[in-house]
Length: 582
Image (tube, rainbow, N blue to C red; front, side, top):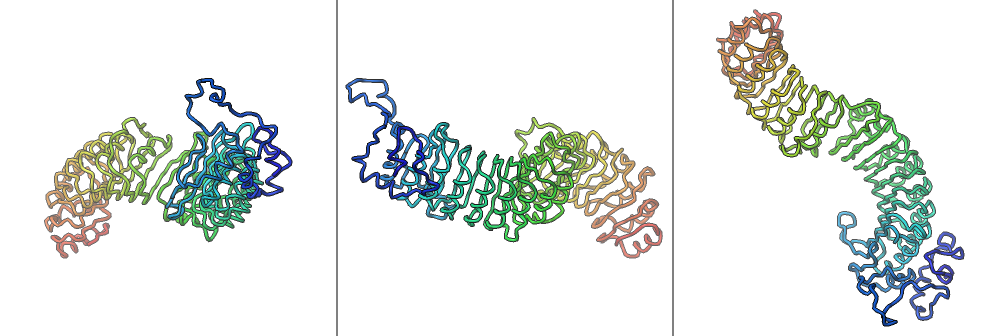
């Protein structure tokens, strides 16, 4: 084998041998073992000395023995003769591992190799390709960095491709000398490849990625970062020829645009579940494609996308394609032309209290509305959030049907949102007076709309505080299902709420006396009143309701079992301008 016979003392292959034009013959590597007793390169320089040969004690004796001092050609024999399937140390950065990764490869497991820094050379890759053949073949190869003098090139990767056809996962980071030719060999020989990770590989272009796409149909995960020569053409090939792709992550690749991203998702066979797009030149068009075709997407990360706008996110959300989305992460850099003004998350069960506080604290000065609906992952965790910054821009907070959101979370959010005007907490059964009172006391601007429907643990204490603190601004109040609310709350409302126009008391514990109090004040100008399900309101309330009817345009008396049909008929005749439901 010319490349080894002409070995001259450093780890380089000479021009007399080439893996690319003359593919590696593993039989020649094995032949070294049978002739090792006569193999002696004439120009080989001494790599190490043994003090014991000369009877001299030197401090090096106390050093730990290391295989690193051996010449690289000896590694061929070490790998080739290693018959065990347990961990066999090779150097500080290279080891032989038999690992069972049941989640990815069933119960068989596969061998993993890792080369980092100065240990990453073509010679070591060639040695690995020989040594792993007796262990069922290499399954995963990770290369981080490269030897500055004789680093990894296409030759080393070609050796792996030819010697390890069972390779299923390949990770290349910071290997500038590996280009398309290396990937050509991997694509030609390693048809079982499932995962490809390319980071800072400036010599790899669309051609190499296309070769992988056309020859590796089992690819399920692709990560591309800081690869300036990879663009739309390569991603279009991946979208066309890799129907099993489940995870895609693309970061800082200037040639990647809308055509590449859309081709990955718009395929009729797309099963992508994880999509991560960072620092790319994509526009609203890509967001629209994600929103329409991302039916299998569960995790979505969008970061530092300078050419997208509010319209793109609006279209993505309204396309109704992200039906399985569980986790959404959006990070907008300070250089963006716009800031998020409204954020609505529904059935995002991985959103926690920490996420809510983070959204409120970090969404800039333009976030005006935050809505969380049926987010089951929220739990009360008050500790560790005191240092968060308040959001003075937030005006509307809607947290609906999130059963884990309790008083501690509510008190915390209240402190972070001093300018709230609209609050919707419907369906939060766990909140109590102690949680809502701090929010009411923190709101400096004055609450205008408050929806507390379904908050069954709240009492008259909260309503009295609400009327006292915000009676001058409150226009809408919904207490539907708050069964502990009594006539005492109606007294506070009548005394303080000058501008209240819509009041819902459905299924509350109010009586005829409370309705009488409401009608007794001339300053109250209700337009809509709901008493649905108030069984303690009877025919005695007829004169009070008639008086209130001077300003009412809507009155709900459904399921009021103590009000007779004849009384309702009289009300209909008297309040001819008011729509009455019965």
